[in-house]
Length: 320
Image 1: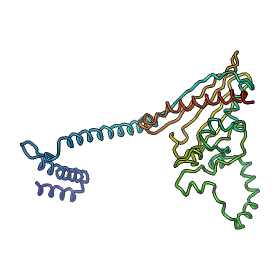
Image 2: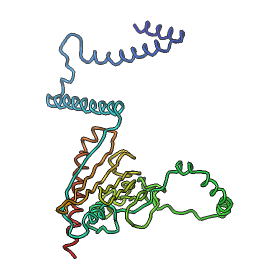
Image 3: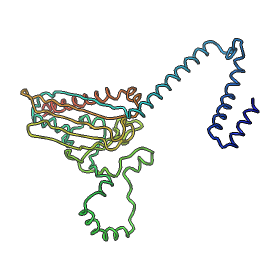
C-alpha cells in the first residue's frame, strides 16, 4: 500500500496534476489519523479505550464535548446568517404621555430634549455620561467636492498659507493623546468643540463614560451623536433626528448604524403631551443581540429617560 501511494504521488508530480496530488495527500493524512484510532480501539473485540478512567470522568467529558459541539454549531450558524442576510437589526419604540407642565407647556419638555443649557445635573443624560458639545464638520472627501468658488478662494489664500507653513511651528498636543497612549478609541479631529447651546442641525455631543462612576472605562470615549434635523412647526409635531457618527469603547452597535427620532406631539385638551422615541441600529451577531438583550435594554433605557425628563420638568416648578 505505501509503495502504491508513493508511486501515485510521484506520477502526479511528474504529470503536473495538482488536483490529483492534493487528493492523494489528503488520503495519506486521513490514513495517518485513522490508523492510531483503530489500534487503540482494537479489532472485533470490546474496546478498552479509556477503561482506566472513572465513569464520572467519562460522563463529564462526553457531555462537555456535546456542549462544545452545540455552541460551535450556533456560532457557525450565526456567522452564516450574517453572511447571507447581513447585520442583525435592532429596533425599539417607546411612547409616553407627559402630564401637563405647570409652566412652559410643550416647550418645557422640548428644552429637556434639545437644550443642554437648561439641563440640571439630575438630567438623565448628565447622570449617565460626561458630555461635550461639538460641531460635526464635513468629511474631507465632501469638502473637496465644493464648487469652483471655494477653489478660487483657496488659491487666493495659497501664498499666505505657504508663508505660514514655511515658519517652524511647535507641534500642537492632541487633547486625545492620553486615550491614544492607553490604546483606547478617541474621537476624531472632525468633531470640533463648541460652546454649549441649543441643538441644531450639524451640532452634537461627545459622550464619555461617567468619570465619577469609576471603573476601567471611566472618562473614556463612548460615542458621538449628531443632530441631523430639527422640525418645530407651530401647530404640528416637533421632531428631532439624531445619529451616531463615531463610536468608542463599550459601544454595542455597529458604527454609523444607530439612528433615533424623537417626536413631541401638540398638547392635548388637558395639557398632556405625547412623546415618542423610535430607534434603529444594527449588530453583526444575532447571538450578541440576544445574549446582551439589546432591544429590551434599549427600550428600557428610553423609557427611563422619558420618565426622568417628566420628573425633571414637573419638579422644577415645585422647587421654585
